[in-house]
Each structure stands twice: as structure tokens, then as C-alpha cells.
Image 1 (cartoon, rainbow, N blue to C red):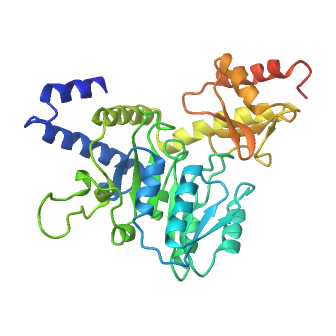
Image 2: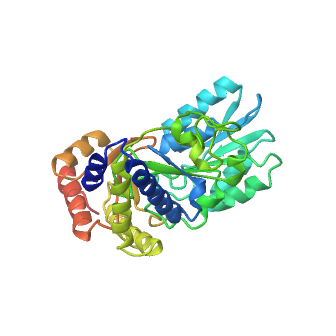
Image 3: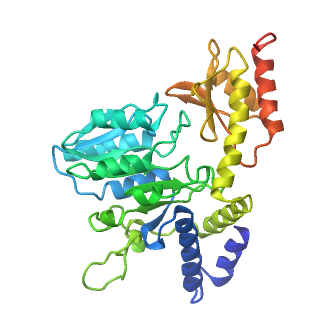
Length: 357
């Protein structure tokens, strides 16, 4: 990132050599992210974060009064808030379908089936639930929506999936597949991307508009890019892209996406089993070892926020979630067995003696 910034300064932000260099850097980042998602670069727009990736194309879709938006009960508040405001402005109805307690793809599909309506126009469902760590059957959901008379749009929040799961064809099956580079991709904050379907690109209009949305400034005809770039806005921090490309290259050095996911699950299962062995710690997903690197758990009778703060003082950083109330730990390819055991030992110490079964 420093090298990228120094190059930009030496060229001069508006120097004659700067724009070709910036174009090459941006194209390289777009190509790298598109490769990770298994799509062509023309379907990928660069964004600052997941919420922007979800909301900008969402607001460009044509909705009619009386249509319905169907959101799962595990979506991030930023996406929910955007949907609520969209519904208010366009006289749409918000429906919810429960997935937090789902323990199988069949559970999710049954819940979806029960809440789908004849006028459902969009479904929002995360690829990997940020609170329970349960992966969602996005491809099966896409198949079901394709059979619906209105073929509702499918919006997928991939904040926790990109970099932690083997994505397969999932990004290709969604209409909006938004992710960030600063979570499981280990990149810098302030940079992400969104994959858009061809049918969305044929229908949706740009929303927040800037010079990067334009194919040709000042010419006749439609000014917008025909591809996903119409949902990009204006000037952004170019060195962030160099950082994200470097972090993705480092992750690729750890193995294929399938190999990395296998390691992540091995680590999370070690933590899950350690929690299960302790009588007063309860993983949210108790029926089977976790299928992702997110391990959420409760400690009945103890304030989750106090535990999070106490662990932070010991150099162990977990997150407290409010819905459902729990603590959430993350295991990545760089997490070691020793670190997992250390977390369990510090939990034992905080909870007092005699806490293990």
C-alpha cells in the first residue's frame, strides 16, 4: 500500500502518466476479485463496503407499489434499514422469514416457501449468517426464485462468506452478491465489491452517480457504463486495492479455496468441541460441529459484554452480538490450535473453578 501511494505521488495525481497507471491498477483489482467470485470482470463493481454493495444496486431496481420485499431474520441492520426506507418511499411491504434457528438447507427452503407471496419481488439472504455461522443454500434458493412467477431478485450479503467459504457458483447465481475485503480476506478497511447479474445490469439504473459511473463524459446517448461500473461513484483510495490484492495473494498461498475452508472448519470444530465439553458454555449450533469459521456461544448467567471486555484485556478479541445474545469467535487459516486452547483456558479462568464437565 505504501509503494502504491508513493508511485501515485511520484506520477502526480493528475499527471499524464497517472491515469493509465490507475486504470491498470483498478483493472487488476477488478480482475482478481472477479476471479475469486468465478465471474467475468464486467459483472463486478468496486465498492467501499458490503452495505454500499447491497444498497446501491438495490435502489436502482424498478419496484411498483404493492410489491413485497422478503428478508431473512438474520440480515445485517444496515441492509434491513435500507430495505425499510426503500419500502417507505415506494409503498412496498416488508416480509420476514426465519432462518436463525434453521439447521439444514431443508429448514431454510421450507421457511422461504412459507413466506413467499405472489407479489414478492426481492429476497435478501446472507450467504453465511453473521450471528449463528450457518451457511445458507443460496443456489437452491435461486432455483426456487427462478420458478416463481415474478422471478424475484436475490440479494446476498457475503460479508462473512468471501474469504472463508469456497464460493463455487454462488456469486453467479445471485443478482446482487456484495462482499468486503477487510474481514476474511484480511485486506484494508474501506474496499469491497459486488457481483451483479446480467438481468440486473439490463434493468437497474445507477443511483449514487459520479464520474466513474460514466462511460464517456459529455457525449450523446446513454452516459452510463453498460457493465457493473455504472454503480461505482467517484474517487477512492487506490492504495487500498494494492493491499487487498496482496492479502488475497497471501491467502492463495495457504491453499485452494476448498483447502482453506477445510482448515477453517477444523479450527472452528476444535473450538466448538472445547465449548461443548464445558457445562456452562453452549454453542448456538449444538446439533453438529460448525460448518464455518464463525462459532457463536452463550454463557448462561454471565453478561456477554463483560466477558468480551475481560477477554480483550487478556488479548483475546471476540464480539458480542445482540440478536441472539451471544459471544462470537472467528477461526481463520492463521488461527492456531494453541490460540484456541488459550481462549478456552481464559474462559475457564474468568468463569471460576469447577466449570468444566
